[in-house]
Length: 288
Ligand code: PAF
Image (cartoon, rainbow, N blue to C red; front, side):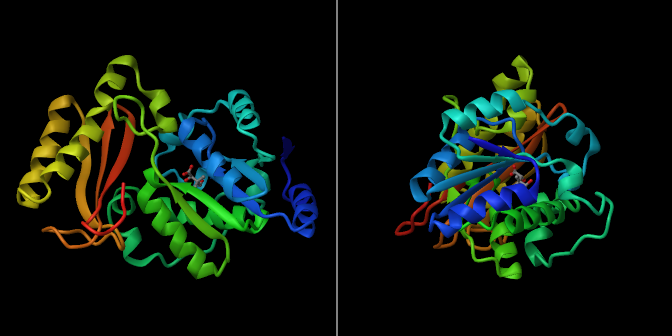
């Protein structure tokens, strides 16, 4: 695996691959890699010839400075995992490389419309602008044919889809299924921050989503959401939201529709904020 810290060097190397007609797959990450990330690398390996992974903890997407400071950094382990997973290139830029204008410098503003006003957008002001800024910069650096992201960040995937439309970047977005621990907890870098007691109850978030999914056609939505929220509160969570939305546009729903729906939740266990979602496939539609 080659490691580049500068955009210019990365681009020189990629230019040779592109000239040789090789397809470039890209997996952007913030490091602290787990099986979920490695499944994205595997998907990229299966669909492309050269797999580029970036590790960059992006300061502009953290609305909570404490969350940024405490974001796990495990670079040595990450390098071993990426090498083992067959990654061809690791891009590991510094903050100065990605933000030569400074993190508080002038940045583009993206019109993500409604998508930025709900759920994560409502609870994490400016988060998606920060995600848009860095993913745009990374895409300009790598210029991949294919981009691989996890369904675990469902709303982020929709934002990136919109970003690709706005910027007219022709990379193809692949949304890969969420990987879960044996007890159902969605894999996430933030899970590393859970102490053993919190880790035990962390599984309740996927159980609450499962409860919503099971009862979606038998109980009114307000009752299901109230019950699921209470299940989490009783377990010790501080709930930001549990919502049921149309999976195609994230419009919040009050009753079932004959299309794929998605149930999404965000809740805090102490200082650690967890998010998760499950697609509820309409009969006749694909989903997970
Ligand atoms: O999902 C993440 O890890 C980050 O939001 C991303 C897409 C790498 C941008 O910093």
